[in-house]
Length: 365
Image 1 (spheres, rainbow, N blue to C red):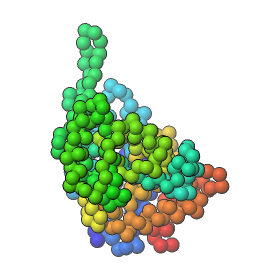
Image 2: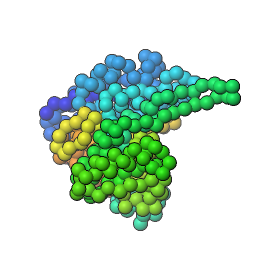
Image 3: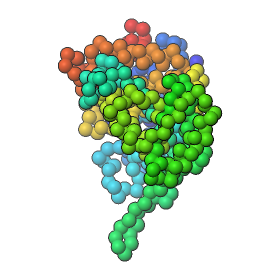
Image 4: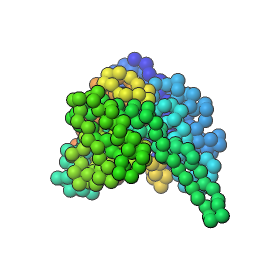
């Protein structure tokens, strides 16, 4: 089978970890006879430096001609001026909107050998396996008005949280479909005791629920959810929430897996279905970590696991996805660690070494 993949390495450690994802992807191709045609483009800080834009029309067009995008983190001190008219993150928001990527899936799974890599007690985190479904193209990040201005009493700023019925309904359906394929429990996270958009969110969730009688729907306030993630994370399975809440909760949840370097993500243009292909953008949830750039010590596992999500959701290659995931778990079980997940008695390796070991296993060696 032939697949076209857009590669956007990004900034900082982005290119380093993306290279390891590509290494594993190409190994899958060799073992199973698939052809992955890679096309490279710019996004984020490097795109600003070279073109003046965080995302060019040419890059967006290139992505639209592919079946999936592998994306590196963006940003760094060079582009951190708060007065700058263009920022690296503008490219990330623009590509999500431009490609219609409304559903962000962030699985949080603790591999058993990493139980001591977390800051929480083993009895709390053992067995954690949940998915956060984050709405990606609405809410505060995209609502209007969004601006700063001066008044006679000083400076002011405003952001607007806005959602339409259609935006909420489609992401709620993604949550229900995933819950139906897992433990048949969906928790809708909102702030309905304060926010009008959350009142609306909860109302739409309740209207969609009768179409999924086999799934139990529970509503949870976002502050309660943030507490449950630390107090009783095994209670949680599939969470669905709006853009800002999802962004914050998944960074918190990364600590359940031992490190941000362990969390992959998929941003999809539709409802995922096992064995079928849907356009998506795949990336680790961590940042560009500019202080680590060029040292080749960053953890590539989140990016490699994002490649597994690409194989499953965009290419319908379920077997290949499982082989990549098994290779990651086996390598961790053998005691190999990057610096962020080190524990006593384990062996420290760098970005390339970790990628090499996983690629060997994926290749059947």
